[in-house]
Amino acid sequence: MKKIVFRNGIYTVFRPLCYVCKVFGLASYSFVADRRNKRVTADYGYWNYMFTVIWLIVFTVGLPAKILTLSSVDFDTGTLLLAFKIHTISSFTSSIVAVVWVSVIKRRKFLEILEYISEVDNKIRYTLQEATYMNRKVMFNIFSGIIVLTVIQCTLILYTIYIFASEPYYIIIIQTISCVPDICNALLLFQFVTLVFMVKQRYGHLNKRLSNWISAAVSRRICLNKEYTRCSQLDRAVDQVNITRLFVSGVRNIEGTLKQTDIHLLRQIYSEMYDITCLINDTYGVPILATTCCMLTGVVFTLYEALISFKMWGVTDVLYAITYLMFFFSVTLICHRGTKEASSSSILVQKLLLGGICRNENVEGLKLFSLQLQVMTIEYTACGFFSLNLSLFASVVSVIVSYIVIMVQIN
Image (cartoon, rainbow, N blue to C red; front, side, top):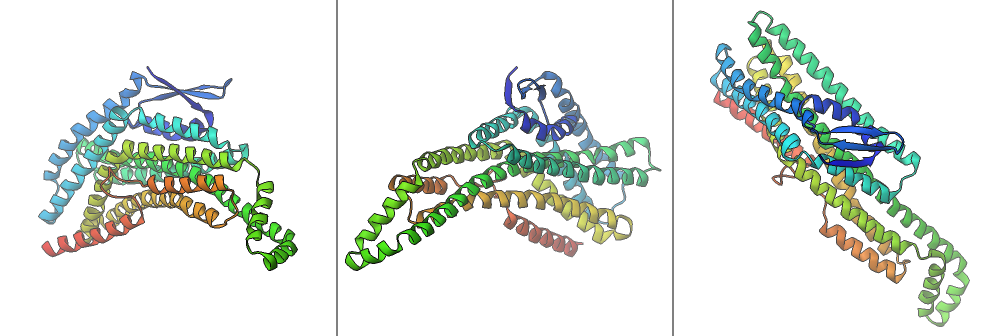
């Protein structure tokens, strides 16, 4: 049994989400808090696989049972029946992929991501106020997501039980179980979005340092211009080159020797955060791809059913479609902001270089840093097939509209 030790703050942030994920088979680990050392030990135990095995059996048996019960349902068109079967298969398959991939195949990766984030935090060295503020924002996102998911899914489950109250008990059980894959997919998205948001916070903190350097450099330049105005005017009358010599000399006395080491430290931190991003893509790429396909088919099916059978299922289908789109939009929005936050670092480095008041060794370090940012581009993808950003969301919406138009024409 392998043990990973990391800072207590990250554990406190993830504890509610980890408990909920463990119930639905999406966590194969447990935490043991050490209050004396303010550390948390993460253990991989066999008992944690109990829920994973249970839900795998439920999903594996529930998929064919759900398909067989469709024969007893009267659909208006054959296209609607085919769309419902495709959506059911994609929903159960994506949940099975999520449980197997996260809890079995990549079960060590989640804790490794937390460990690497903790190592980055040790190098950044936040103040207590900064760490508290960042953790509170993450916890707020987790609690708000869990509350929204609980309200939506409980409402849909109760409504499903109410609709099928006159049916046999096994039909009610199958219809209720068919709502669980959506919960697993949503919890997987919460894990992924939370990790992306935490990485975005670290990028934002480092960009704030670069912005502070730019502001400090501009203020020093203004002070030096005021201090050497008379000397510069006299030197300009004699020789234009003397201005640069006197200006650099003044900066060297004020700037100090710590900035070169700070640039090297920033390069190390960005390199480690790039590795964290690659690890997140490797851990959640396949489940995110399966979940995205599930949400796409879900939106197409629910909107098509709402158009065909609006009197019976119209409101429910519209709510389902809005829920799928809301989850997908949140994923693309967070990934888009995280990518944009990381890409803005190269702009800040170029602004710092264009200031023209850094020493030669610092200029060389910033040039290497700029080259590193160009090579180590940050991008969140679904198993490498497509990038997760707002452009993808716009493309998906257009594809959904096209599919619905085609299905309506076929009908």
